[in-house]
Length: 421
Image 1: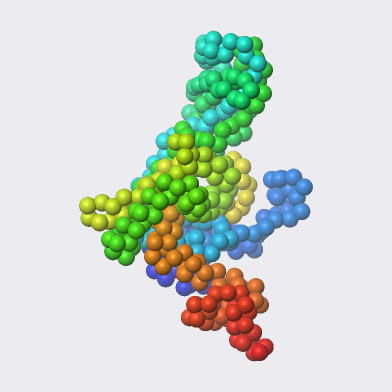
Image 2 (image 1 turned 90 degrees about the vertical axis):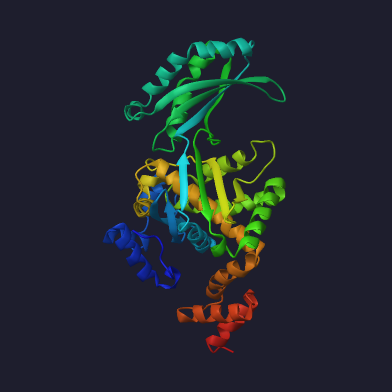
């Protein structure tokens, strides 16, 4: 399979679906699910959350040109924001002939926290908890024999002493290898199961027992070299590096810089039925672990003048459990990705985040973010103005030609094309 599809955006929806179906071996049922002929049933939705009334559809696109660890990959992305999919695809193209993206995952360990209050001798209690480590792990693993059977389960503990505004806390960290699951349910169940024992050991009261979304034992890492020629030359490379340095030094810029990264990451997380809020919370917390909120990426210029980018962030995602196995579109999107493990998924997501960041910085450092974004946004405005069918393309083409993508002008153009004025 070759992920480089020249002019993919120019094909019709039906043609794109056929190309991806053939490349990813989708069935007719898979195709019907993607195009909405077999929507999420109300019974499935009702089983997923409470007080269900209906469901909302989000467009699913596919990013092209991605080569990750030597494998060409189509990336499904669910997002309502124009330009995100196109930007990721264009940025990935600049790395393709340089080998693409190289990515890894540090492990699949999640952290469960047990907060203990009212401990009279916290420092001694900390050591007493360590004394009972084997018993603690045994109780945890009895709660999930299936996870243990596939090589996962509770593997270690850490005990911390934290000074809050009002008191000293003892906090037990339970380290759980969740393998191909995100693992929240397993970790929370284990944390709750050992709370009585922790209370007995410390003579304190276990209060909160919950997973941490700062999954710093589950870091996804990706790096790539991007051709200076495809980016626009060495001057553009230097501008991009300068833009990164600004973000890394200033939290106000870093917030928007990292939001751009998450445009791509959250789109893949959502498309695969994973927890966007968990990934976003972990990413932003990780960006601030030094004490200042900084860039999640690093950008450098190599001796050849090419751009070198890298990214590292928590990636608590899975391919089993939750919506990954209950939402029909999520299951098809995982099939498009053609992955066999949560590690592969994390590698894909980190690579997309790196590409998305590059695309945004390149736009900012050259023509400005609005040129490409607003041209794509013009489609939404044309629909809002009442354009249909071929009228949409005609309205957009004229608005882009005039470099005027305001709604009032789009509305006027739509009326002119429809012969209403």
